Image 1 (cartoon, rainbow, N blue to C red):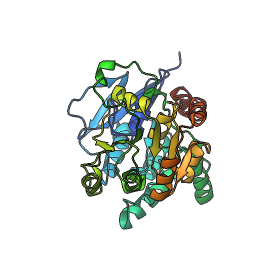
Image 2 (image 1 turned 90 degrees about the vertical axis):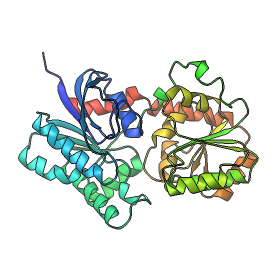
Image 3 (image 1 turned 180 degrees about the horizontal axis):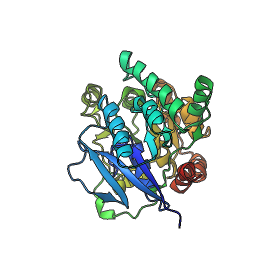
Image 4 (image 1 turned 45 degrees about the vertical axis):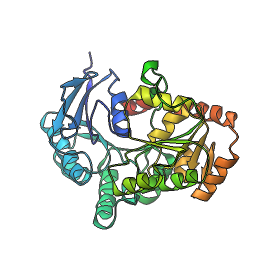
Length: 358
């Protein structure tokens, strides 16, 4: 009997998932039984630590998985993996790429597959030295990984043009957000009977939260917006400016999948403001609900939606779209068809597993 491939997953906050897209990806990948998984987790994030989750071994490091600390977190995760006998690595993001040349030199049989995420150096929150370092990390990850994963064909095209390197394009699944058993008691007291638009994201400038709020502030259309308003100056300023408007409910973030299902299932349409990254997990999640989507007009979103949906570039344009919005039921069904064809975890899991079983 052939032994299972032992795969170390590096670069996420960890599982159980309670942070973002990479964590949801890991949570769904480790359900695959043909591989044996070790998942590196940020000890700073988890107050309660368990040794195993869905059959995966969990290893905690006393570091944050985000910001500057992610460089050390990812690098130490890989070194620990090497020391404990791992020879197959799935690396999520490029923070630890600085250690990859050394690993490839000393351990030539180690296989590294890296999801380079969404051109981190281009995000507005990174400037100067940080942006430069992220560019270097991206270049190292592309050069020293055996396979490079892009979650959007626009990123794959960028890698090919800049580095003359082919990528494997693998997006994210979103069906976990829709195909769940819900407890109606959890949301029977939510104010979701009246019509409303919905937005869910991290409250950052590149997600155009200010643009969305400005447009809805000039409209009578109700908006429920779920985000981390109190973790940045940008968020607290927006909360102070718009939080008391009667047509807006600016809610704190929730990772309760049943609660989020209720907000998504009952909304009239969804507003997606992401302008950076690639294929955004929050977008493919809402696509499974068959809701009309109004998205920021960037090439990533147009590719993810295959041109379906409505697109805005500024608050005035979004304000006009909201005013003229007529329901557009056929748009929702078209978007759901795309989600079922491209963005299910069965499809995504098979694509990842193929990289380690060949």
